[in-house]
Image (tube, rainbow, N blue to C red; front, side, top):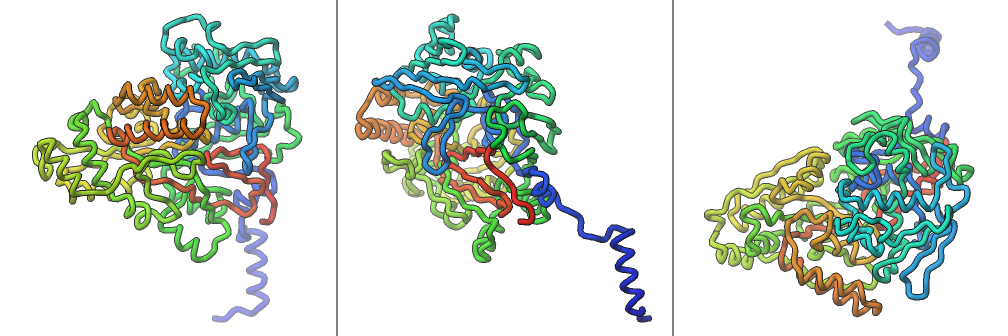
Length: 540
């Protein structure tokens, strides 16, 4: 039976006023009004400790909570003041004198001093902390000897607080990229006194990074950390530049499902995704979706090969595996979004450095090497296991290479996926054969990639080392001529690629959705996010 028009109208009004049929405000719409930025950060963070975290998602949280000594203009990468208001560099490029801001404070209101920086660096260099990035600080004279336990006297490390606001650092060798390196998590000062109030500041696992206990220095302070749900940070009332900080809060959401975060974006629950499902990239490009972002990124996806695990102790087997990776197919047919094949570990976008020829796709040569190792057509070769963390992209890459190695070499390849935390633990413990992961530049110099494979690197985790490689790296550190230095570094890269404890696969781009409501968003090639001057425009 047909209802009279006025009854239909009355029913609609009652629905709106009584039953709540009106369109509900989304998190993004509310966030635009209230200045709350909702962003996905990939996997659940293992911690918020700048000295022990290693993931890119974790780094974004650290970037919100802890200030560096020096920051950078995203467009030009020119250094700009942060905790250090200014700095002086000696003529020989060896000594840096930082003049800290007199108004820099910790989130508990106490002053942030040069001695805090010294104590912070002592912490990361203390061997019991087992910090993977401690070797980054080997740039400081005396740091390596202290970290390796050759001395317990930290006064031998050339980081000195001349007075509460003057920090003097002397390097082991000139490093034009030193100021850029300071942007990374491991260099950011932490409040050792606050950590000691909770437990041992020189051991992992001290619960100082929980809400109510974390004392930080950045534009935001930690308010909530609900595991597998969200991490909430709010604008800090003690931050020296708080009047210019336009966000009131950031809600970080961990998820291993890029499909789920894309759905959350479409339903108005996120301003920004961490990544994007591969199936959504080309339609977004075709439709000129204004939310689509494809940013250049100095990041290489690659395999670590554990040379301590049979049969990967045999360099011929490792080289065969490297020669049987069809990078063109992976980058151009499997992974849309501007990714490039990676025959080398150092991306070609790095200015002033020309990588060596690198690894190629040559299945015939791969079969010959495998035969020389006594495993023609894969006969007698035990199964090889590829470990990767929960990710659609990593799964597709692992499956593609599984097929290539089986087709071209006759190898039985098995795939194992784990949560990010478990993969990281397996990597540190050497509990894997082949591990699929990535490395993003920490600064714009080839050493940010090549120092990984030094014998003293805390991020090597392959079991491979070579005195010749170390010698080339050390030699490059003493060279002032940038052209000659780059040539020596390229020689070192050629050596590690030939030894094949690593197999580069593709150079990445950062593909994600970003709401047009987000303003002031300026990504860098090293994927650093400066949330201090991001803002939201309501109604966008």
